[in-house]
Image (cartoon, rainbow, N blue to C red):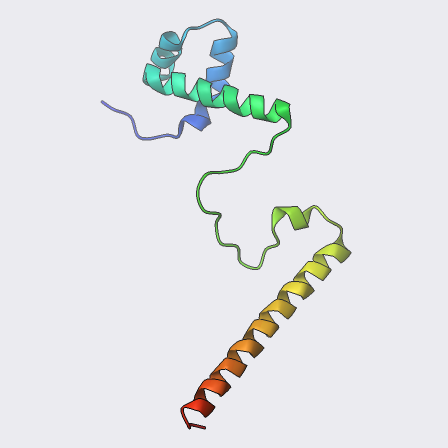
Length: 116
């Protein structure tokens, strides 16, 4: 009977422990009930990730970043509180300026079409 889906990253500790003990990929796969190719791919991705960390490169998730609900970006969160407040104030000012520009364009459009 096939077991339910569980993300392989949840087995990270067990896979690395078995690899440290000297198990081969096939033995690790049989021990955990996974495919050998899954273990191979996981170990490859894990080693690539470790190489990037050792080289000091940042690790980015793939795909489009999630929308945040008013949260500050991580690069701003690392800064002090004053810098965070400046960032928030600047973003609000940009938003207000954009609204003013849209309002002005709408007013110009309505005056050109002879509407009030």
